Image (cartoon, rainbow, N blue to C red; front, side, top):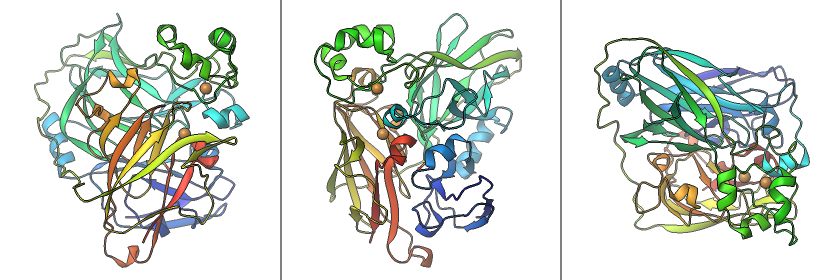
Length: 452
Ligand code: C2O
Ligand code: CU
Ligand code: CU
C-alpha cells in the first residue's frame, strides 16, 4: 500500500498505523517526524487479517492533543472471510454496514488538559459518533453490521442496545481489533476502552416499523482508585467529590474502595456533566421500512490458529503510579530506551498486572497482536461478563492489539514476535507498549520494545 499523508495540523507530527504489522521506519516509534506543511509517503505491505484498523498521530507528548483534534482515519482491510460474510448477509458498506467512531469532546473547547485530566485522562461532555452529536439512523427490518472504534482519549464505554421501553436487545459480536472472530458470540453488552474496536451484528428483522432502539453506554463503576487516601475522606467522597459512580454500584462498593479515592475528583476535572461510567444514549435507530430478509448469520466466520505457548517465557508488566506519574514496571518512557527486549521469532506470554490502587489502563502494543489467554482476579462487573473458565470476555476472543486491565486484575496474553524476513524488517525493530489512555501515554506510561 502506498499512502501519502499531508500534515496540515500546524505542528510536526508522526503517524502510527494502529494494529498493523509494519516495519519501524514507517511507524510511529518516534523516528519519522513529518514537519508542518509537509507530506510523507508511506509505502508498506499490508500483512494483516481483514479488519478495520486505524492510524493516528504519535508524536511523544502531543498524541493526546492531536488525536483529540481529530487527526486520525480508518483503514479497512478486506479478505475472503470478509467477502463471504458480506455476501451471506447481503451487507452494503455505508447502508447496512456502518462504522461508528466514538469520540467524546468538550463543548467549545480547544484541547486543554488540566493536571487532573493528565492524571485520569481527559473526558468530554459530549460523545460524537462519526463527528456528530446525538446522531440517529433510519433502518429497515434486517441485519445491520456496526464496526465500532473507540477513538476517545480516555473514556471507556459499556455498550448495549435497548428498545424505547428499556428492554435489552442482544447482538452478536463477530469481530474485534484484529478482525473476525472464528464464530459469532451472543452478547448483551460489552466494555470498550480507548483504541479498542468491535464488529457486531444487530438483527432488526423482527422489529416493527415505528420502533425506536438505542445504543447506550450503561452505568458502571469507573474504578478510579488511584491514591491511598488519608482516612476519614470516604464519607464525603461521593457527595462532595462528584465522582462518576452510579448509585447502584456506589452502594455495593466496599468501604475500602471508597477510602482509596483520595485525589481530586472535582466535577469539572473529572467528566463534568458526563462522568465516566454515567449512562447516556449514544445513537438512535428509527425503524422506517419493512423489508423481507431471510439471511442467517454464518456459524463460522474465520479461522485462527492458537499461538503455541508450550515453550515460552513469561514477562511480568506491572501498571502503577508513583512520584506523580503512571508507570510500567516502575519506569516512564525515555526516548531511545527500550527496556523490553525480545528475540525475533519467539513467543512470549505477558502477564499484565494492574495494582488495586490504580485505575483501568488500556494496554496497547505496536506491531504485534495479543491472544488473550486468561483474566485473573477481575472486578465483579467484569467477572460477570466472562464467557469461559479462564475468565475471558467475548471481547477478548480473536486477536487484540489493546486490552483493558482493571484495578486489581491480571491479564495474560500470548504474543508471537515473528517478523517477515524481508529487507524492510532487516535490523532491530523498535515498537511501543503503552497505555492508550492518551493522557497517560503522553505522560510517559509507555516503554520501548526492541526486537533483536
Ligand atoms: Cu493507537 Cu501507540 O497507539
Ligand atoms: Cu478518579
Ligand atoms: Cu492508563
